[in-house]
Length: 354
Image (cartoon, rainbow, N blue to C red; front, top):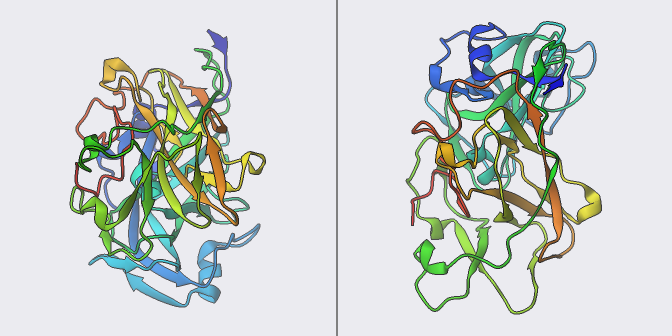
């Protein structure tokens, strides 16, 4: 045990604190073990570019000047690949001076290459909700590979709250864990690709595939949207510029019941690629008691200007652990909505199982 003054709030505190409110009732299944799902509101705006409002300015004021057009999400709408949108979320927050928030795309959002970042009024940084903030939350959306249909109530991001003035003792978090890409591969037959093929390393997105409805799980044939990437001769795999890949970590990931974890932002020193858009791991991910033994981290990888070679054991990111104030009421994987417990190489939930 250590004395900690910076700890993550578990689901029971998120639910009872009143820090997160909405103009429509919050649903119990929005509360994950150490985060709360945020829902799209009714209005969306097409904007010419990403932006931060900056000190002294509200997002609504910036939208008055920047919005190209406004549209209604209540009957759903298509977000087109290559465009940037701003949506007011259904939830807003009222945080005390010792509590801050951080947001991150949900796993399915990242695995569809749907770039999603939250901003606040007077915001100076993406995905950060400052201590003591009272006000609305807005979501910037930029589909990079697939056009996506969404609607009011669609859950694309999640919010985690941190108490910076916790006075009790907490369990000391696990040490930071580095991870690499599994390039030994998985049997192609496990993915319905037949026998006699080399092991499968991952999938590369087809850039001109069809429309995906975010709220329709298990609805789309994998090969209509993805190309398999197989093990080739040699000790590594070359990722092509400006392509989007789904890969898996070589390491198994286990998040203890009294901790949460996050894959930290990509470091330019490790190579010309961006790793993992959706970086939150809830308590219980990957542990046997919650049905997750052997879970891998699934990586959303986008390369930049030059081809990039990934080799065996090459570190491309890290997992940082943080303590909770107390055990959550429920661990990840202990209900039917946990789509990725026990995963190895797994695409977003919208695609049919092999």
